[in-house]
Amino acid sequence: MQGIGSTSKTDKDIIPRFFIAIKRNIMKIEIHIGKLIKSKMDEGGRKANWLAKQINCDKSNISKMYKRKYIDIEQLIQISIILDFDFFALYSQFIIEQIKRKNDKEK
Image (tube, rainbow, N blue to C red):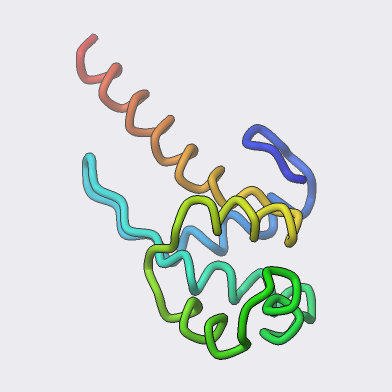
């Protein structure tokens, strides 16, 4: 699994492209996690029915998930493990940047 601080070629290729889907304001982040999961699935050449079998749900639920900005944390953990990609790193990277920005302003 790709970690938060990982610098593998895969992370370098994926994370910048994923961040296109992020709208940043100070202390506000909007990630469309469904689009990011779909992008990761497409990159791996996987179809919705494959993921549906992995998480034991109907294919239509996967299609609906792709359209959602937010999903349950437990489901995101499960999908991160299945797809071997740490989606939480996207959120963590934003948090780290905001803390650094806040601390720089306070100096």
